[in-house]
Image 1 (cartoon, rainbow, N blue to C red):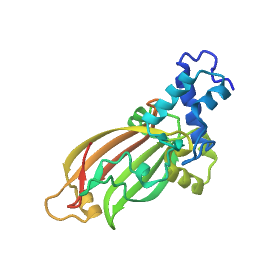
Image 2: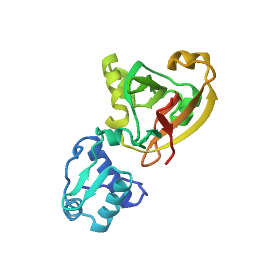
Image 3: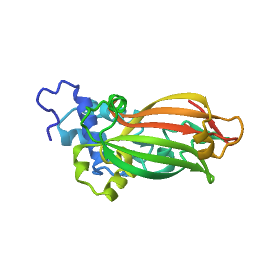
Image 4: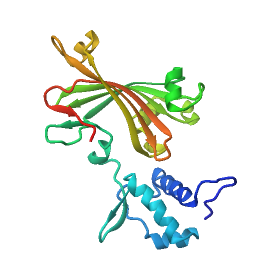
Length: 238
């Protein structure tokens, strides 16, 4: 198998990492699956063992692969609760990351506003999937998000049901998210916030803006959220 493409000036180990990412996205390497050892992969690709190890290091650093003593290297389980909440800064009193029970609504496909296309680094005619995401914890709504998902042109041919499936799957069908950049601010609750979160009197909410990116810093998702932590949740950056 040849990994190098014409005019590709990126180091070979990064190209190998790209190949491994593609295998995970396409489920050639399925979540939880043990994969071949580094020497076998190096032989099959016709490259050095050191190059494969550097590519493995990239994926391990971004928690896409897990190395276990005596078990070898496994593909991370992206459907597990730990991985689903890995980008969340919301924690319970015990310090556990909370992603909540998620409900998706109002899924639409169209051209986004210029500020959204700029943050997603797409041109003005690129389709963007927009939807609302509501998160609850122990039955209490604590976050409502406007989500903008980067998708490719093939989604134009999809039914509404298929679009909703893409919204639920998020980026996992097209890429792998490895990092986030989030801004947070505290604001006085608006009348809409008070209705949404059932607040009374003087109250504050968190205003969150987050970009989730691939390991190559390619923006995959923009979310703009408002959050009321209540007495049982905290926001922690570490």
